[in-house]
Image (cartoon, rainbow, N blue to C red; front, top):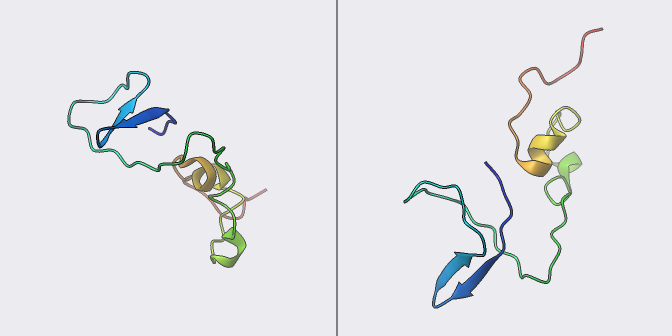
Length: 78
């Protein structure tokens, strides 16, 4: 699951502005940006041509949004 949530940092704790559907004690990964910034949705693919990845066209959603990779990436048979 991947979602964007606004939160307030208060007394050393990030407090989400809305309830989250997470189990108590769930481990999460945070990427923090200042509230006034608009994150670039293409940040995950900038420089992908230099990375050596050959599946950028088939798996762009994976690299941009963090979705699962397609199972049969690579040249398509016609």
